[in-house]
Amino acid sequence: MDSNSSQVAPVDDSQIQISIQSATQDDSQTETRHMNPQLYKAAAGCKTNDEVSDILKRFHDLGDKLTPMENTVLHIAAQFGEQERVQLILEQPSGSSLLQRINKLGETPVHLAAREGHLNVVQALIDAETERVEFLRMKNHEGDTALHEAVRYHHPKVVRLLIEKDTEFTYGPNDKGNTPLYMAAERGFDDLVNIILDNRRSSPDHRGLMGRTALHAAVISKHPGTYL
Image (tube, rainbow, N blue to C red; front, side, top):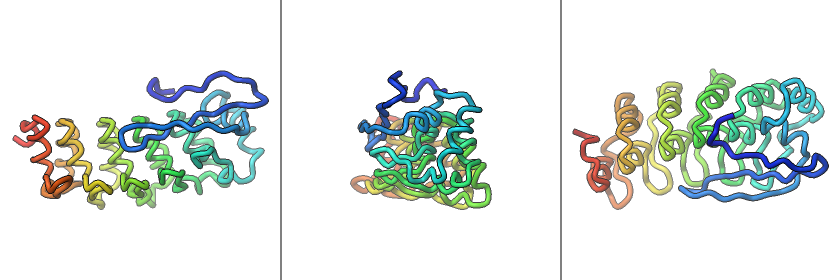
């Protein structure tokens, strides 16, 4: 499990308190609710693979097992970086239907995995939909795609993977008017700027906040070398 993932506190099996962390803009909020302890632990990586398989088979429809933030078990496994759990969930009869399920913030499992930088999980989610990568283009309620999230939290390998797996799509602005390229330039993430420009997945001429282009953002943020 990735060291940056949220942690599960040990509690009584009879009643587990879950804590699902979801980013809102650049901050985060945590909401809790009681949930079936075995199912949650299976998704969060607290069980062996054999135990996980047995537990998942007890639930006919995994899609109706939600947290207060309306995260599914696939959201949970993706956020915690549990690649093997993600694959086991996707192998269930109702598993593939969870790929495009959104939570209260409009986030799919790939949004959460991209935000946390879980490269192997993002890859596993993509592999499950090799013929329909359009789900990578889905936006949350802030207009952010998974690529926006990977850029915001500076995960170069995830950024490159997302771009390479959907070569037909040019990523536009979110609800704040910011493209992934603009966000990378504004933050001084030169490596991400180069990855995006090399693949031409975002227009450098797009005008974001206050009519600024990515070059403006780089200069204002004192990173003019990004475009030199």
